[in-house]
Length: 419
Ligand SMILES: [Zn+2]
Image (tube, rainbow, N blue to C red; front, side):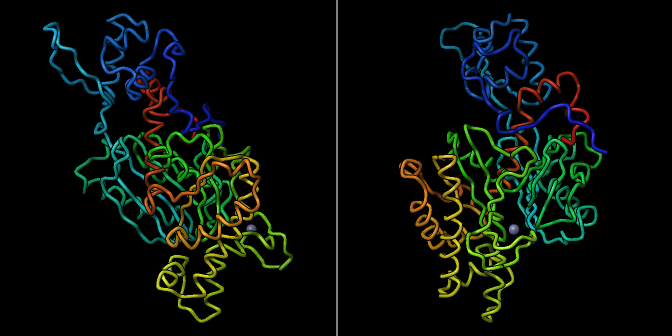
C-alpha cells in the first residue's frame, strides 16, 4: 500500500533561485542562504546580511548550518582596505558524491558524480532487465558501490542517488507506473533497491525527462520552452514548458511513440495498439525490417553503425524515421511553441541523416510562427545525457532550499515519500 507523499517533488522547479532578494521570507533560512551563494548573488557574510536583513549572529548561524552539511566553504581573501579579512563563501562541490544509474532496455549506465555533476567514474553494464528489478538490480548496485570505492569514496560520502528508467514514473513514490519496455518493473519501489542501508534521498524519473533535465547544465540552461526528443528503440519526448518539466496528471505525458499515424497499415505496436509512431519509425521497427532484409542487426545501435558505413537501406530508414517522427512532433511544436527541440537517443548517432528528415516535416507541418525562431539541435551530452541528467536531478534536490532546511532539522529526506 502506497503512502501519500508529504511533498511533491519537481526537481526542475525546486532549484529555482529567487532572482529578487526581496522575495526571500524573513527570517531567511539556511536553504535560502545557500540559493544566494549558488546563484552568485552573495559570496560573503556581509552580502548575505545585506540581502536578507539577517543580523550578523543569524548569518553566522546559517553559514554554520551550511558548513555542517558540507555544502559551503569559506576561503580567506585579503582585504585591500586593511580591515577585517572578508571570507569568500562558495558552494562545496566536493562535499560529497552522488550515485547515478540510467536504466535502458538493453544496458544500464552507471556513474559516480560530484555535487557539481562532474562524472568521476562511468561504466555501462549488461543486465537481464526483463527479470524484474529485484533480480536484476542487486549485482548492478553492487557494481555502483564498487565504483564508489574505486573513486576513493565511502558510502558515507554519498549524498543521494538519481535514477532514470524507460517508462512513466510516479516520482513521489519512486516507482514506474507503466513501462512498455520493461513491464516487469511496474509498481515496484526502486529507491530501496538503490539506497540499501543508506539514509539518502533517491529520485527516480522517466529517462527522457532526465535527459531534458540534463540540458539545465548546458548552453540551453535558460531555455524555458524545450522539447527533448529521445529517438532510440522507442520514441519519447520530455516537455519543458514555461520553465517547468511537464509530466502530466498521471506522469503519462510525452509518449510520442504511441501516437498513431494516420495510415491504417495495421502494424502492431509493443503497447498493443496498431500503427503507433514507434511501430513504424522506432528503432525496434527498423531492426525488424532490416533483419527481414538479411542484415545482421539486433539493436538500433547496429542500425546506426551500418548506416554510418553507408548501408543504403539503413540510411533510407533513418531518414524516413526522422520524417515520420517530425510529422508527429510538428503537432507538439504547434501546440507548445518550444524555442528549441533537442535530439538525443541512439538514432542521434546518425544525426545529419535523421534530422534532415525530421526538420523537413516539422517545418512543413507546424505553424509558421511556431517555427520562426525554432532551433533543432543535438543533445549537449550525447551518450552521457542520461547520466548527467540523473546527476543534475539529484544534486538539484540536495542543494534545494527544501532539502537543506529539512537537513537542518535532522531529516535527510521527506518522510513517507519514496524519495
Ligand atoms: Zn504503441
